[in-house]
Amino acid sequence: MPAMVVLSAFFLDLVLGDPRWLPHPVRGIGWMIDRTEPVLRRFARSPRSEKRAGVLLVMFIVLLVYAFSALLLFLASFYSSMLGFIIAVLLAYTTLAARDLARSARTVLVHLEGGDIAGARRALSMIVGRDTAELDEQGITRAVVETVAENASDGVIAPLFYLALGGPALAMAYKAVNTLDSMVGYKNSRYRDFGWAAARLDDLANFIPARVTAVLLALAAWCLPGASGRNAFRISVRDGRKHASPNSGYPEAAVAGALGLRLGGPGAYGGLILDKPTIGDGLRDFDKKCIEKSIRLMYCATTFGVLTAVFWAQKATG
Image (cartoon, rainbow, N blue to C red; front, side, top):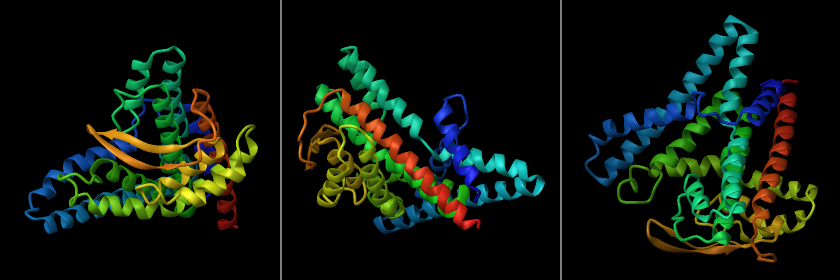
């Protein structure tokens, strides 16, 4: 894969983000999942058959997305090398979400800076799964920082990883896995069995990228005033495994260590209080500046990730 594809896709994400007027493949993937799930559920009469149906859903969606992307790239390149390059850049661009992540976090920050706690809660509810109605300013800030840390992996570094590894088609397949997990990978009664395959494949797909993200965030901390790269590495190693997810804890621990914060702890989900382990030492109190600092960490780590992907692409193409 040409290095210019990675650089161009990153540039488009920085400039455009995810404008609502632009058709996005993830919305198309979500549409396919919505249409395929009820068809497969007709044949699911037991927990075992639900698992099988879920496996079929994952195989169908991921393979279809990969095959369609690869075919589109092949046909475009066959017609014209320039058209092939343009399609590759556009597909790669849609897998990255750095600007959209920063925009969502800053929307919450704007409400906090204006003293609009209710508005901050509403904006936060659009990007997290927890209950936000009772959160105070510190709770809102903590939730935003956690979201930026986790999505630095899922929304930026992981797509870059698969883009470098197998080009835009593999990056699109990763987005299909990620979308499946976000739609059916729950542990409630409806999806415990049906969503099992989606959740497990998402864990597997993010295993390496999450740890790479932690390393990149720690390296980024060395470049930002007031952040500690050494502490980011230390907390990643110490607390990365504490999270319920086998992957999310590592980037969260890196950010917690870099900024001297304590993440995790009790949180309300669906009206139930979940007492999650804490991550980090809590050397500093939360304030609104923590949100902007986490965004800068994410962008700096993303830059390192892009440079690494470009280096890999150049080596692969000789």
